[in-house]
Structure formats: structure tokens, C-alpha cells
Image (cartoon, rainbow, N blue to C red):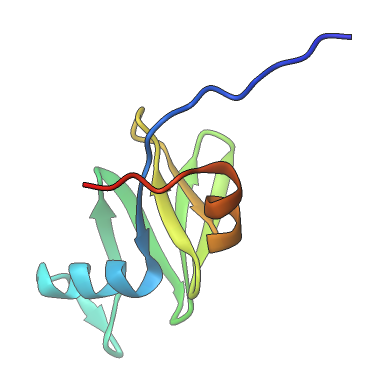
Length: 95
């Protein structure tokens, strides 16, 4: 049996609400007050419903919903996670 340790990396996160506000302030096209289709960190994000967005990862489409965080890995890959995941696997980095 072999054992592996996760590599440490620094990620950036943005909450669902922060992302929506950021995109609205950037002048994105709105549908019923919500951004419809936009780019974040060079990746396309599309509106599924007012509580969820979808984005493509190397593993397929992933959902990003209210109460979640959108993480950006050092390689630019996006992922969705909740606060419990962040607190379990990452230490907060102070600016």
C-alpha cells in the first residue's frame, strides 16, 4: 500500500453573492436581474437558474450555487466548494 500527501497550494475564492455583484458591476448582460453568461478568470460561466451557475472543468460541468464558494486553483482551474470544505482542507491566508 502506498500513501500520498496532498500538495499545498494557495487558492482564491469568491462567494456566490460576491461573484454576482462583481459581474453586475462589470456591466454583464442581465436577465431578471441576474447575470446570464459571463467570464470569470477567463472561464465561461452560464446561468442555470437564479440560485445556480454552471462552468466547465476538466472533469465535466460543475454547479456553483448560493451559499457556495468558487475556488480558483493556482493553475486557473475553477471548482465549487462550501465553507466546511475550505476550513477542512485550507488555512486562510492573510493579505
